Image 1 (cartoon, helix red, strand yellow):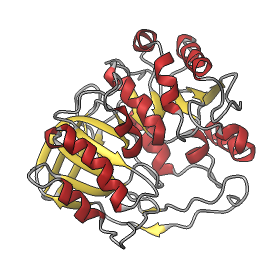
Image 2 (image 1 turned 90 degrees about the vertical axis):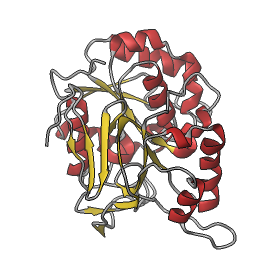
Image 3 (image 1 turned 180 degrees about the vertical axis):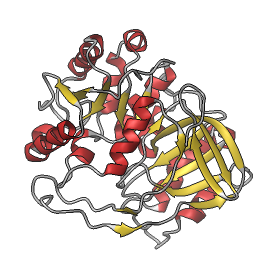
Length: 333
């Protein structure tokens, strides 16, 4: 699979496939665009970049057409989603996967944009579970260097050992109203091993409530033998168990090579007071033996890793090691 590696994604096409965050939060969006420029990227936006249509920026067919135009332009090295939300799946039936596969322009995003990333992976198109415009580049004071560096490495196809940041946060002030301040940070929290073992396989990363909705559709990529990176936000353990039970009942969960969970963002509590996510996961995994790592920095916390779907991930838990191979198949520290 070809990635655009001749330059570090000098031009990013900005696309709004989910919530209309640029229209809703113009001040933060302007700040994000300025931050992209200061980070060394040129930007191209679509006609519906800051549009409003029902719960999205435009009709799904128009959004798909704008993506097709971006990647066919020849000037865009990667497409960066503006933000997440709940409506990215509406675009799926309108995508021309032959055109996208021919262009081989990576799509970058997370949250519900995960459904588009997984559809890309299912059709042999590069995709990166990584930061988005408004949410990560719009921070007061600019994006986190750890986040920017990780995105650059993924766009360049560079692999290596993954390591936690020196501090983290799930602070999320209301955009354009309360976000004219630095985020409240927490000290570094190490990644944790819930179940020991080793694993190696193609990486597949996504937001659990979004990608579980792909079951029974043609947009779900193969999951057998994958190192499965799952993240969520604002979730209680009962909802977490419900989603994972779909994976278990389908027979897919026991056939993955390993599970890596993102650092938990603003977790909730089940009605009866149950709040043990470790116990919930180990409960649903009874009878399986794959290694499990948790509290890894990707998803709805900051700063965050960028994870190229399809790249080979290697896990060892004694001592803990997470490594992603370069797209050329060599490992670089």
